[in-house]
Length: 430
Image (cartoon, rainbow, N blue to C red; front, side, top):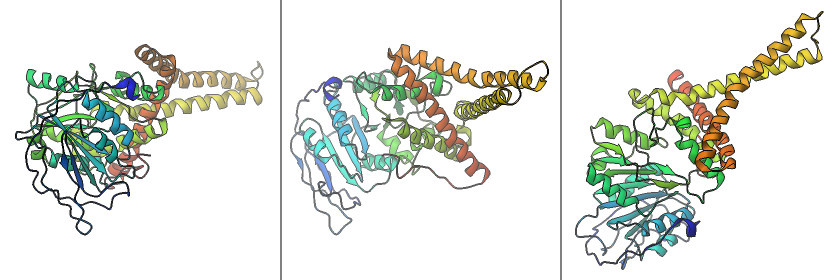
């Protein structure tokens, strides 16, 4: 995929002088292949990793390669066991047409570190690598933001790849109309698997999400999400960065940006290729937790719950009723076929026969019509019948997974009064 997807372009090297001062952090004992400490890797030279004093404190030595003036962009990427994805992302960053940026990689307690990958790209990028204890993506982004130097912080997931004009598109939008925060949409690359394309379709289609993730048609205003999100560094620090929510922390941050009266908008041309989950089981875990997160957000910000957020729950209940109707109709049909035969002398048989046909038709028709709509739309967009068929599965997994998580959280938090929670935490990334 690397050869298909990316065009690498080596940036002109420049020696930049400065002093990082002392940076402190708390680190676990890293894996054997991962030297402990903080590593700063630059286009020329860099700084050696220091050894931990005891088991907690790390000091970073004086380093070169910090600009005398702040860079325009700091790209912050939290990573958990994704070295291959980081490799592809860094290659795409080398090909950026705009060069005024640094990259901050924060290893969130990974067992498969990406230190060696970062070393390979250190000659082409201004790259800072940090290893820390696992705390989740939100706190890892905060960790990186504390050490970033750019005027704007751009938050990316490790499973995205950037087109060459990504940063140029961001700069063009900022020149056209300044913004305190922004976000961009995502797309599926031609080299993605059919399942990845189907999942991407279900997460971006108006017929599944209402267009709230950056579509041209939308049922609610755009909230930047952490797979492709930017914010001024001073605004990030003023608002305190991401909260300690394990899931939904990016929407929580976006809500606080709007509540603070900051200018926040969609940059439609600053899009990324986003791989997302690679199978439907992992996708279910993701959207189930998204449903839980929506209720957690509602408890913090009651005004944030909109009609579009209820649609997956309504869809899930509707699917359940359709299946119940279909099952009831099938039972009626089987009863008339094997117990009450339809005849002039047996009114029960005829009643069960027609009731069974009606109930099965009423139950199956909405599911079949929606499936045909999704399949046709996805097939036209992706030019693949196979992707269209998989998109039907992806749409049902997304909507029912989110709906089940939403209903579960509503029952536990709003009815039983329990505290904030999430699911699949130990197996979410597997």
